[in-house]
Image (cartoon, rainbow, N blue to C red; front, side, top):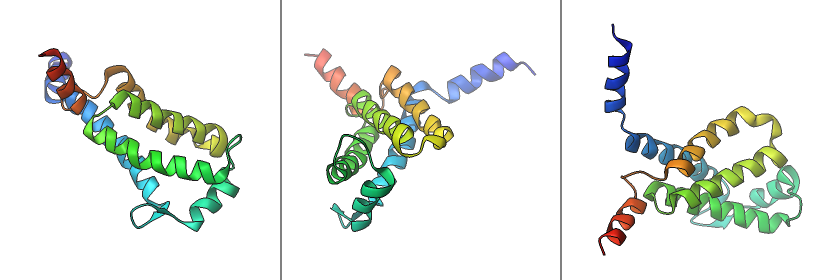
Amino acid sequence: MNLSRIGAGLHRALPDDLLLLACRFSIAGVFWLSGRTKVEGWFTLTDTTFLLFRQDYALPLIAPEIAAYLATAAEHVLPVLLVLGLGTRFAALGVLGMTAVIQTFVYPSAWPTHLSWAAPMLVLLGRGGGRWSLDQLIARRWRSR
């Protein structure tokens, strides 16, 4: 068994663009589902959401009501951008920032979970959305002008 041949075969079977797509979708899913727990219907924040931001989350320097709206909006917009691969680095940075706030102020003992979220976001920050993203489509069209 030649491990280098196996590794090369896996590299061909798992191209970087597929891995970047997986990073985008995995993080988008986590934050989209979290955002959906905070609303009723399309985008009506629940009383429970405001209660969470007043009592459990209690972020410093920002009113709980404002934090609730900002976080919930970000949990809806940023995942859509990630799935589309539109503004991928911006969206990954936004979600990474939210993760840092959650880690620092809300659930500091949940670092293993937050690290598992941060890893794909760091990949997206460094590599972008890949060829299977709107970012690349826009870049190609821009270059062909």
